[in-house]
Image 1 (tube, rainbow, N blue to C red):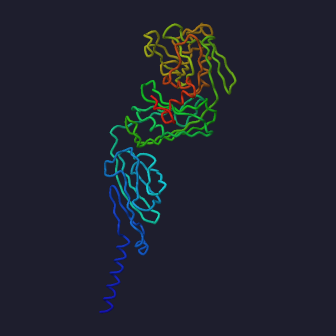
Image 2: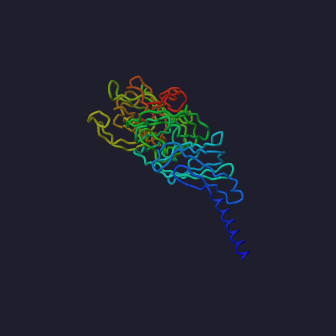
Image 3: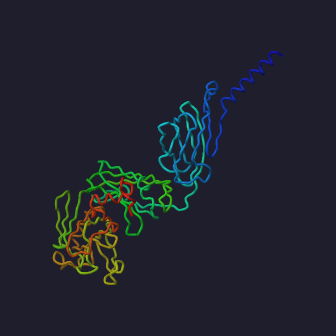
Length: 401
């Protein structure tokens, strides 16, 4: 009988230790704790941590940064993991009691929070964010994993308006293989949509590798939330430059700073809407043989023809291309509808060697103005200081429009 009583007493003691080891455990949408210690003896001396999370429930605001606060003691590590968007990185406060994510929570995502403390305790919590009411998306240029010319900017066009330009720009990280100096600048694209370009201070160096990491998921653009991150990369190709002098009607093609070809051309007819643009334009696309119709550029029904070796310089319709019908004007008269025309042979040569992103530096007195910022890639017509002022996130710069 005495042996039975002793066994019962021992069982009661073991049960009491087990309850001590598991005491203080809870979980929920906003705060919770868990000693996380499997050693019963040590558990008796560890105070179960209590945390508070600023986001709670199932409809927490997307885009807000997650803030985890410990009631007492110091945090050791905090992980915030999303069921759709991966983990959120964050930083501890100097006193070790608060952890804040470096970016906002993504829309329509369930998150779990796990915090460990310096004395070995563990606390957990969970919440979910509301779905995005309006989604913003982007189109990026140049095409990923391509080689482009020395004047090609990194360009991002947004589907919906961007009112929070500085917030968006801060999530865009450009890295280059040679630490190229550059700046973002906000402009209006020719399509009327918001656009931000990253342009180097000077033309790129050949061989430079460029990468973009756009951590936009969870960022509120002011015209809709982003619901994914983006990335791209490209390489700078050959050092090529085309100079067009519409006063002398000559085109000079350079490689590595050396002129390798001079071509007689004919530019836009002076005195009206058929004049060419001047300034620096950039080859947007090598379109080859295309159908050009005058009504698409506001010139009525004056022409409709197939044109070979076409290289687009502006969205408004200025090209460099073959124009055999204008042969008698090459080198002596500007007599086109705004494009830079040349012989079949010369256009074939130039088309065969030109890269997307190559600059065309166009001069001439009888032109209709400088290529606008959004009419292709017109940013090279601004000074470096003026381009930097287009940044919304640069210290001292207002939100560009």
